[in-house]
Structures are given as C-alpha cells and as structure tokens.
Image (cartoon, rainbow over the protein chains, first blue to last red):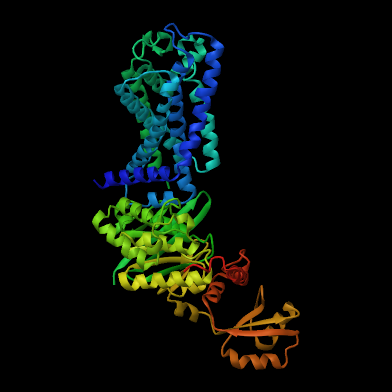
Length: 264
Length: 331
C-alpha cells in the first residue's frame, strides 16, 4: 500500500514538472511536424501517385511511423530526468527515502510513459492532414499501444540513466541510440522492400514492432502486406507485435530495477 | 541514557583510498553531536553510511536499534537528512516538495497537511509556500530542506554542513531555527561542519582528520587540551622571532599565515614582559582564548582550512557579499 503511494507520488511529480514546463510540449512538436508535413510532402510528391500495392500515399504510410518516432524520442529523453535529478541532488532525497527501489523505478517509468503518450496523442491532430480515418475504437487502441511502447522504452531509458552519471554522457548515448532505432525501423520505409541486411536489422529492433502495431491499427485491415514485418514467413499480427515489445520492456525493466538496487 | 547511534570499527575504502579508517563512537539520544574536520576528512562518507546510501567496507553501525546494512528501511524511517549539496526540486513549490516527501515517507494525508503547515510556519516559509523554489534565496532553500528533513518526525536529524556557502546573518538565523526545533522536538542532531563556531553548539564533538577520530569530547574539554592563551606576534622576520622566543622563554612557537603564535599561561601578564625587550622588529601583538581551531592544530599539526585560503579569506568573502547585500536581504 505504501509502495503504491510512492509509485503514485513519483509519477505525479514527473507529470507536475511536465505540466509546469509547457514549452516542452511545443518544442517537441516541431520535429515531427517537419518530418511529416515537410519531409513527407516532399517524398510523396516526388513519388508520383500511389505507394504500395493498395494505393496508400506516402504520408498515410509515414503517419504511424511519426507517432512511433515521437513516442521513442520522448521515452528515451525521460531518462534525462533521472540524470537531471542526480545532477541537481533530488535523486538523493528519493534514494534515502524508506521506499524500495522497484517502486521508484516503476513510478519513474510510468511517469515517463504517461508523458510520452501525451506527446504521442498530440500527434492525433494530424489525422486530417495524413488523410487516414481511424474509428474511435482504433484511436483508443492506438493510445494503449503508444503507452505499452512508451513504457518499454522508458525502462530502457531508466537502465541507461542508472548507469550514466552526467548529462553530457546521457545526451551522447541518447543520440547514438535514437537515430539507429528510428532509421532501422519501418517508420519511414516499408520493411519488405528492403535488402536483406537492412531488413534483418529492422527485425531485431524492438521499436519496429511498436510502429508496426500502430500502422496496422491506423491503416486498417486492407493495409498492404509490403508494409508489415514478417517473421519465419508469417505476417506479425498486432497481438504478437505487442508481445515482442512488452517482453523487451520486461527484460529492460528487470535490468533497470537491479541496476537501481545496487546504486550507492 | 540510550545510545541512538553505535558505530564500531567502521571502515570505507574507495580503491586504495581509505576514506573512513576504523572509526568507533556512540551518539546519545537527544544530544547534538558534532563531526568536525576539514573537507575530505571522511565526514560525508560516514554520514552516507549511517544513512544507508553507502555500504561500509568493514565494521557495523546501528541507528535507532537498526543495522544500517541489513535493516535499511527501518533506518531510513528513523532519520532525517539535510545534505551538504542542495537536494530540492527547484521546479516545484515548497508545498509540493513537502507533499512529495510526505508521500515517499507514507505520512497519512490528513496528518501531513497539518504538519506541513506547522513546519513551514516554524521556518518562516508559510507565506511563500506556493512560490517555485527556484525563486528562493540560499538561506530559504536551506530552511526548506531542514523543514523537509523533520517532516516525518525522525529520531535523528543529520545536518551535513548545513550552512555551507551562506552568509553569517543567514547562518545565525538557520541556527536559531535548528536550536528551537531541538528544544521542541527533543531529537538527536548529528552535525558535520568545518566551521568552528558552528561546532561550538554541539554537546560533544568528534574531531576527524584523514578518516580517523583524533579526539572526542565536549567543546570545553577539548579547548582545555590547549595549554593556555594564544599569543600571535607579527614581526619583520618570523624566523628570528621563533628563535628569540625559544631562546628567551623556552617556548616552541609555530608559524601560520598571520605570523608566529604560541600558547602561554596568563597571557595578559606575559605580553608586557615580551614587549619590553623584543629584538625581532615587533609589528603587532594579539591575545585570545583557545578555540576549536587551536585544538585542531594541536591534534593534527595543520590548520583545518588549509587550501581554502584560511579563515581570514572566508571572513573577507562574507563581508564583501554582505556589503553587496546579495544574500543578506532574506531572512
């Protein structure tokens, strides 16, 4: 019971900080806007006509990838808040409190995941621009998928942050991680059209499965086979995508908690 | 009298460096226990071990009856902590910082509401409870940290250099609060400092140097270890002054940044004798009662603030800061 309250208060504090710093909402909006509206329009108009065998255009295809990108970026960046707390001393207040470290890690990951999901939800305003028409159920499902992906990636961010002591180092590791995770995913190009070496890299990237599940929800059942991830000759359904990303999150979470427990 | 803290053969190594070297001591319930020593002497490392933030390499420590390695949660519940470095969330208000604390220390909500109000009033921050801590002065932040450290009614309050970097006026103010708290709550205070005047408020002081406790007693008893009054002489030539004092009075004087000094009984009567026929070009002469500084020098052979520009330089800094009115305007 006490642990639950600790999880809640740690989650609540991160949300409070996020709410107080609303400029973050706006600045984190610029990058996906540039990608989707500028980059997406540029690519779409240079391709002329349809894309994929079902006639989706590039922006429709890319839109779920951009939501995935936003969730990915914000999740990894939440690790910054731990490093920040360490640098500003607040982490000590948490570490010396009579709360077990598992609760601290869970509270932090939930806070980061909630914020990343909110940022992902902001991307829903691009639905008309992307010319897709998900139903209300689809949107709700999409939000759940965002949260699952965000939680898993936050566990990874937490693991990195528990090992890295300075802001500069974290920023460096985050940069080294973010772009490979983004470019080696189906966010911007269909995985089936890739050469084998690139295709395999996409398949080992957990982010790919998060984006794939969201794309299937947004583009619906007639979504092109060319867009999907195929493992052992089978098209990954949404549920298996979720299993992969959740398992990844679980492993990261266990490692992160263990790493936190040994913290001095 | 109960011992609230019992430390036996505590040792902490970082690689080759021995930060705390076989330290043993007890702290009695209700007392102010001071840890006095220069930076890097092992004060903060000892506190970190007692607060469960570090594991000792060797030795045991019991706090409020709980082992700091095996019963960490109970130990954590028993102590409040004001760290040497700031540890507030400066993006939040004072109220939110305390609400967070109440949350992680599982103080029931109805209890915590009253307690937060009471404690913020005590440290004179109630009026500004909704301000972001970012806009607080150094002294206000410290008071908030002390308030936070007390919120869960700990048995022991650790104050690690509680007034470091604050001007003298704010330091005095913070000490008024701490002493008032102690009168009201009757808690044990474990204090580390390298300010001598601050150490004077302690009931007992452990002097620590290079990871070892070199003396442990009341401030008065420690001061009486120094033989008598301290006479400081400034001369044209310190070397010849040293020799002259040795030759004439059989006293081993020592040099420091301000001149030559030595201990002597009945200093007031000694000064006229000295002045009458001093040959080494006397510039000034001063006399004072022994302080903890002198005790420290006597026990360790060096000054406590070596490498920090000495006490005079520190006083100068405070004076300048106060003249500019930077930190001094807040209370």
